[in-house]
View 1 (cartoon, chains in turn blue, orange):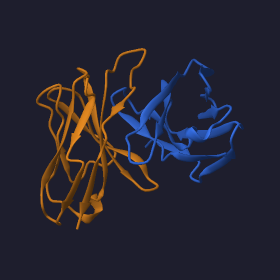
View 2 (tube, rainbow over the protein chains, first blue to last red):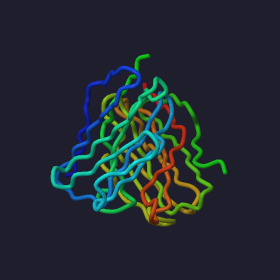
View 3 (tube, each protein chain N blue to C red):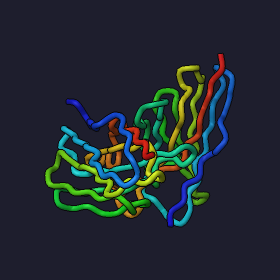
View 4 (cartoon, rainbow over the protein chains, first blue to last red):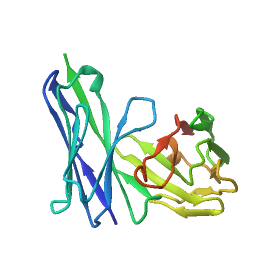
Length: 112
Length: 115
């Protein structure tokens, strides 16, 4: 079965630094991978989608890479701010676009 | 657009009771899914649907039933609640077409406690 692994430990970094989160997957070759943000007590919110033929994608201060050989995606937040503190989840389609499975998420804390 | 709505927001059940969690979306999305989220476990897919009348099992379907009689609604039924079903339940929908295929819109969640 498909397995998605994210840093289980919380990531604490200083404001202004770049935060880098990792998502690894096994036993599958997804056509794309997604990243979501989740704040406490709320549902996840979609951030970015990167396809298997894209090496990198950017959106404002966010950058995502996708290495299909390593079966890994990296999620970067540059010039991090305390407002970026949240849990970040990666997700991918398992067998079809209608069946999306998630990693366990990484909690990111940005200290002023 | 209200997006994805879920009711109730909170529910407490006794072991063995049954109930239905409601989910509705007004975006005319074909795909809808139910997830449960437990501490440290991330989101786990319970059931999903690719359109009215079509449903399938996800990663953790046991103890849950779903039906999809309309595009808008996707209720989740707990037949006989167990303490292991204590969790936060999220409903999600997506349009399923490029370039945003699979981008899921989530409801606010239902926090369920089974005593």
